[in-house]
Amino acid sequence: MRLSSKLLVSAFILTLLALQLVAIIGPFDDWPFASNSMFAYYRVPGEPAYDIAILLEDETGQVRRLDPVRDLGVPSADSFRRLVFSRWYGSTDPAFPQGKYPDDSRAAFVARLTDLSRKIVNVIRRRNPAAPAITAINIDLRTMLPQGNGWTSQRETPIGQYSVASDQFSLLTQ
Image (cartoon, rainbow, N blue to C red; front, side, top):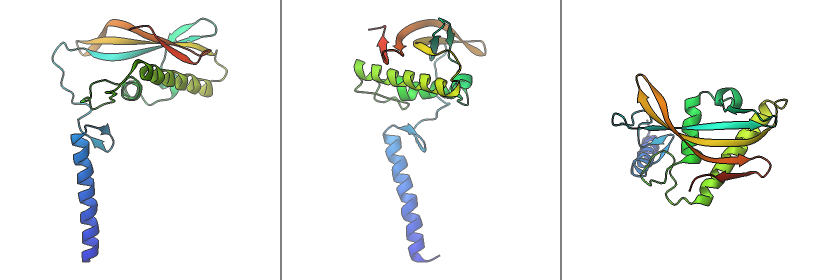
């Protein structure tokens, strides 16, 4: 290997190491620069986890829970939940590595949930145009506690509702 090739390879490796160092200091949790292990988050026994419940109301008045695999074509409900919490719901903790909004405002949060709801409606329309039209989406935050080998919902807190007619998400909580 010539000296110039060795220098190029060395520069490339050093660049990758520098980027990874920036990601660790960040912290960022975007591939390929993950500063924490996604599946190794330590929880104290009895500490709650959170889930999102998305309820769809259609033009016939029927209300049902969103099934992200069937309705949206995502690979799994877990991947959809991680996507929602990292991209739209997020955290206001600046040190939180997965989806953070440290300078968040009520208006920015509403805008993100409007965007999420609009995307859900559009994907459902595109995947099943013959289905009754979605008129509203209700989003609830579920507090989950470990029970046996699984999780059980201890409390559901309504977050808000998206109206398709007004194309606006309205918060129900302060």
